[in-house]
Image (cartoon, rainbow, N blue to C red; front, side):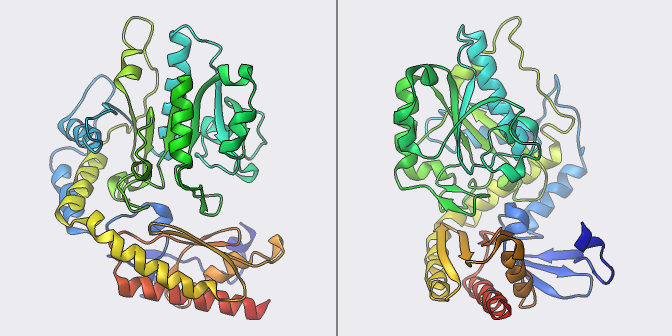
Length: 404
């Protein structure tokens, strides 16, 4: 805030966008290197999404979903559940954003076990350096202290472990207290694009299944093609008990979230006294549903997933060139998600942020996680745009290194 309010500071104001490009108040253009905080999928101003939202506006923008329903929500639920063969995740609960998608999953989990005669199952197992949102419950299972604000003396009962191997050191009492395990599959975003070992998710799913512990997958960031498949969990053939979706759900156009779950969980809430009391004013907004349906239409019509392998391979090759820079400590990539860790520099120098500001002068907008530079373009990015993005990062790293 101090820097933002300082004399002479001119905030960057985005006035328009088209494809992977954004334009500021002075007419300067930038490539959207982090998909507008990890949300945009098909680029800005996509005609299919724009048309769908306009068409829905001509009917109605939003009505309450509490005790009602509407066609866009029904159609969207049908398409989302159909993204897994056999529809093992057969039920959809709508909310507003990634944090609330996670809140829904955890609240459903705890209420389910309490109603099922297992009140001892009251603990959520999560992982160090995880991030699951900023609402109270979601923050309480996070593993990054700076995002908690007031420590960890709030929210759900949480058991936090560093890795899969740590599960073998849990006591029987600890295991029996677990209602669910929550994880960001394949890659932890706010930890600096930290990759899980291959096969880890599949092993974790088997561990949960053997003990009848629910598995909650937070695919708020990894969902909708980011990792190379529609959902990250599909790369290891894992179907969770809860799948949390937001960000790219609407193509990055509208705030909206969905929590997918199983018929078993749904049936656990049937009957008097078992109501799931959770609902928001804009749950299942018609505009959000229209945008999400249009986004899934673009996936089909433009064969978005089929085009990803070439783009992922191109990004891999471009990042190898960055890896050779003296100040690049590590490069981590999963699909079109990349983290370039620079340094080592003292944390207070904010060199990661300075490198991103330097890259801005070369036409790239992105934000770091501490000293990890994030590159996560829209899936619509071209190979030429990928090359320009990585070149801008190179300039940013080199200029910041020279200053240091």
